[in-house]
Length: 210
Picture 1: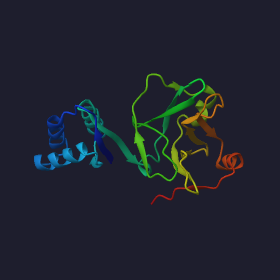
Picture 2: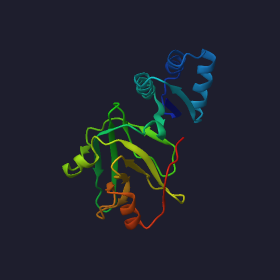
Picture 3: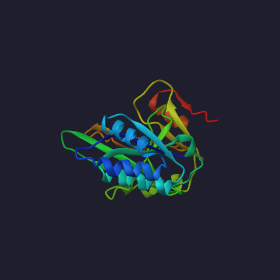
Picture 4: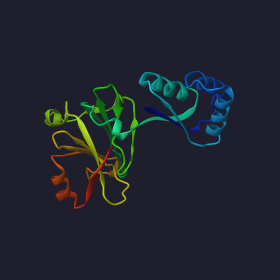
């Protein structure tokens, strides 16, 4: 199940074409479509679902072209069992400022996902970034062609990213922002949960999915 989240609009949003898009793609009445459109214009968040990946991505593409702010998300439990085919990272360095990192995990089902925040139940479906580069070859045989089997969070409340756990025990996470020059903004891979606990000195929990 793919969840499409509309959460606002840009200046110049094309309201009528967006209403027609909702009416056509979600098989709802024009009255319902207009109501959703008005909520989005007012900055409210509206979530609709689609069972078809291609259709969901097409709706996102068209809605963005019409000036609508939206994103495609899935439940984390629906990612479990998928196999990683590639991981690419985009790093940006700003002298005397902040370094930034964005990671893109390519799955065998054609989706590209991020790394959710700790204790989240959802994962963001993203797009390819031409400036992102594949991770160092040293990690290829350790994380490529490996299944995602769980998602690990900090036990206490945290604003940090969580960890994808692979079938071989490896963990993948990222830190998006850090002061320039400290190498803090990057993708991080741990050999096991035990190694992570030794380095971070925190308690973690595996998510219990039904």
